Length: 105
Image (tube, rainbow, N blue to C red; front, side):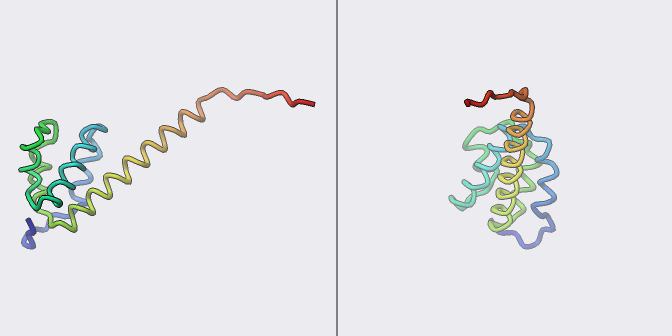
């Protein structure tokens, strides 16, 4: 799966992944980890899992990366997902009306 002849880098792919919805981002991460674990391609895993919502162009770009770069990409996707979840939680928390609590006393 290692291809040292390519100039593709995880950052080249992450810009496309930013447009993915949550399910697509999670799905791509699964494919990346499975490809590394099973020593197969992302395309093979995508076909095997039936993740038809992952664009073929992205799958092709991922297959140009070596295992270390795939893991770096998966890490970047994970960090982005966590940051988005944290931001959403903060927005929700900040959207709650301020309630004055009475002091016992």
